Amino acid sequence: MIEETKIVKAISLINKLTKQGELIWKINRNPINVSLSGDEKLNGYTYETIYNDQNLRLFKFNSTFYSEYDTWEVSSHHRLSFTESNGTSLWDFPLGREVDDLYETVRFKTSNVESFFDKLNLDTNEDDLPF
Image 1: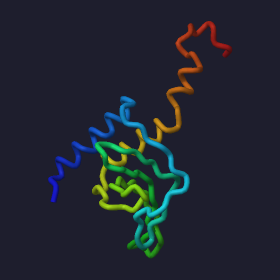
Image 2: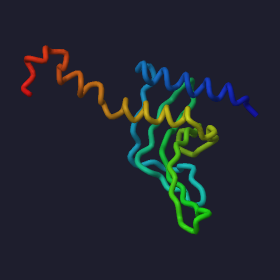
Image 3: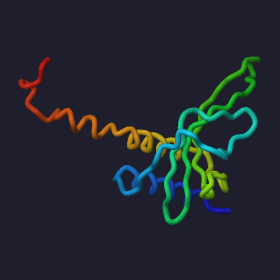
Image 4: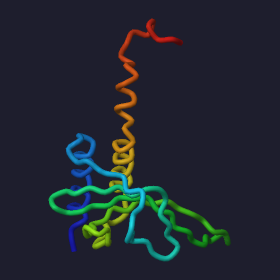
């Protein structure tokens, strides 16, 4: 098995490259072969990219479980996976904060938030603003 520190460093590098715009992710609105099991359900879109000739998929999912308080609980998680070109999952990275951080970076980058704020030209003098 791979050392946990290598996995953390790999995810951190992918996140850094994504933030710098060197790694581009695409939204997949109709994903197939997403690795979910039991009570897991996809929550939103999946995001896909290719890095070092490896297909990567990132997504958010909800899992339902029966709690110690005799109620059903839902928790959200993020999964990063190696996939085949047809979308079949090959291996899932361990769940963790690094995958959560990457998901937020990818979501931010694919929604063009930076472009929106750049177009607003907010660097103008406060006296020039209409409010």
